[in-house]
Image (cartoon, rainbow, N blue to C red; front, side, top):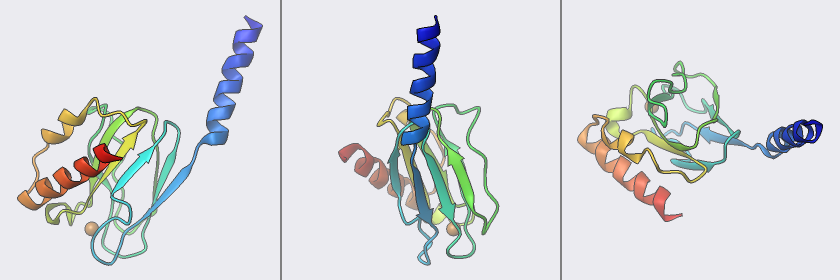
Length: 138
Ligand SMILES: [Cu+2]
């Protein structure tokens, strides 16, 4: 029992030690500097407001009832991802123009269907197709 507790603690510690922080900027071209982020459970993504007028709003994720919070315009936003799966987010003002991003946790695509059920503009739909293809390729 003690050994189990010790092993669990070590596992938690090693997850914390290995956790990475990925930084994504809002670009002057109304895009995210990294459109597809492939990460592991426990990793953190920080969105940096390098250019004005953008934010982060989640549209889909592995738990559709508990998506990560939406950020305010021009604010630093930071999310730690705990559930494996695919997450789709957009910039609220520019989502229709295709300012979208994907986060793939643990290379797990089990909930890809959640993304395809989201109503998007035509431009955003084609951007999502391109990003999904990119995510599945590498
Ligand atoms: Cu924007």
